[in-house]
Amino acid sequence: MHEQYMDMAIREARKAMEEGEVPTGCVIIGPGQDDPSRRMVLGRAHNQVELLKDATAHAEMIAITQAASALEDWRLTDTVMYVTKEPCIMCAGAIVLARIPLVVYGTPDPKRGAVSVFGALDHPQLNHRCETINGIRQEECRQMLQSFFAEKRAKT
Image 1 (spheres, rainbow, N blue to C red):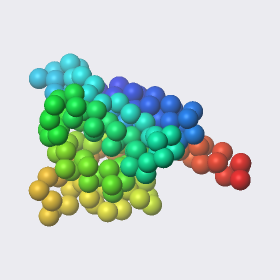
Image 2: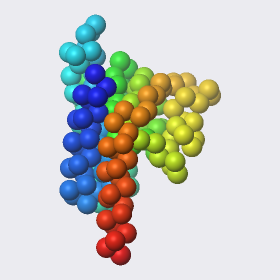
Image 3: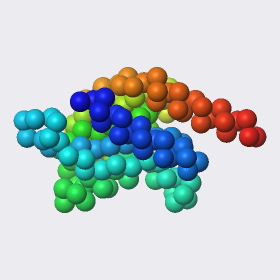
């Protein structure tokens, strides 16, 4: 199941790249009773920082807003977030506040990663902690980011 939803997030990341945004895509799926294949997509987004001229317009933030609207509740318990790149510390704060129990990400962010650098999603002093799974479609996610930034550097 993780591969299928990560594929959706990768499609969102490709949209971001086509728009000149850092290629990060995010999908949030909702409750599926006892059958994970029956879960529905509650939020689907890609980075829109440049388009909206808004530093907070990360894929995760937009998808959280969509999912909360779909559920008519800010508590996103029993959801799963799929994101192509490890969330940043800002997005981690929103994830914890929204009470998302599981975050699945493709590739780590060794400079700004909320998990690998800050340990923010499962910090023992927080009232909510998230489980994480990483490495789903990691090579594809990493390659997309590397090619995006290589192209940016080549233009300067």
